[in-house]
Image (cartoon, rainbow, N blue to C red):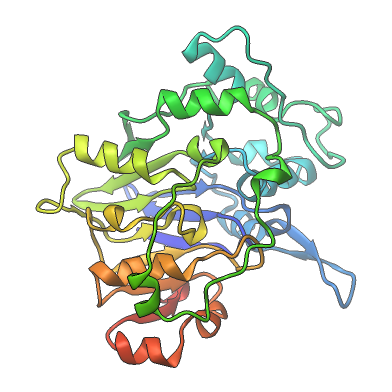
Length: 350
């Protein structure tokens, strides 16, 4: 199985490919990152450049994306998809199936007739001849037959091709909280863009003073998180999910400090935020590979405190960054001396 963590700026976008039982390549795309993950304007030349998302899609063609998963509707996960659909008239023809929890689907499963749900709109002038500017993204994917409005929720085990997906999040409570505040774009008040990072602190200092306060953002809490299993190997993808829900569901599956979930890798929740990655979660997971997806330009992510928590339970950890320039900003010489066996790597080394 090949896993490519795309450069998605401060967001997530992950491409998974593998050969199925008859040797045919299958492609899964998890999240689309920010709009600039698809295309972006070069600040120097003014030219429009292809981002990792567009390069990946073009690399897959003429084959299709067999499964597209949108974990939740935060801009740094959905906007790359919205831009792709707006700019590429053949986008929908490149997709076989979509997993996505829409507001209207959540209303149905929770039998909530009162909630007002804003639709997700195409944000840019679209090249789609069958979609007028401003039409709903979810209505379009439904009409084209790639989305069946099925809710993906905690406790489900979904068998897809030769893979198993054990869904850890979201549960009905998290879906209900999202429904109360559903909008097509998370309000700016939810983001702490001015928060200072903790990169001048050593790992030892952060371990000694560690205090955990869980993320309470309803958008993050609605994120689809899962254990992906192929044959006997597990891979853990956490989106931006809330750790209390993950810990609870892992406990129901029988995992604890004496029986850890063995995974090939874990994609850390919420770009390595300290509010989404407590020590208690890492104590349930047996792995050497921890992946951080962000360029670090917003919200102080990743928090160095998150890496300190990993090292408190695994002093031979391998920490992978899709933007390796963060390594020199975060890791101090004293950290290297205190934890000499830890490796800090770019995701190209996975």
